[in-house]
Length: 222
Ligand code: DX5
Ligand code: ZN
Image (tube, rainbow, N blue to C red; front, side, top):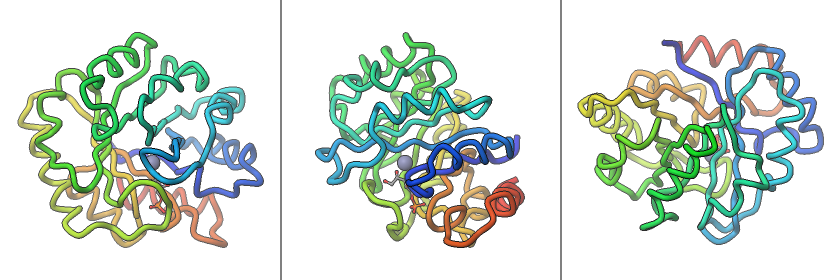
């Protein structure tokens, strides 16, 4: 299986989001990464739930890869119109002892549950959850803003998570989110990542032709 692109919409031209979505959709990109922040779990606000819901009216085949950096993420699911085909990633650090119920609710809606972990959370925190989820989002930056530097040891952490997932016997996808740069994306692929959140350090660098950038990134993570 080739590496899968998931461009990060919060890094796109925020005054032209509909055309950004259509361009990627027409290029055959598989996923669009939609970051939601509640200004509590992380101190920032980005795409709001109604905008995330509205993307469904535009997308023809691209699937939604929704990343909730929020406490009680389930409160937003209706407003986002979470349903079949969506990847929905919730943070291990934000859900506490409701994580099992949140994962069950994502599945009840026909969506695909992923758990996201921040840089300071060890991979082993998720091993008991492998049987309940479809994948993991490994944050290689501290969540909350685009353009943050990669955290030291992130490539080793990706390899370690890949080994744990493969040893578990469950078929799980490993998504890498944060500073997926031109220089590092090939190494992230070699470390075992399957999905690549392409943001400000690659696809959305100023002045790049979107089609050329998508083709370049797809070739680097093949
Ligand atoms: C950051 C978000 C990322 C962000 C990545 O908290 O989760 O999806 O858009 O942006 P870059 O690629 O600039 O790190
Ligand atoms: Zn994200």
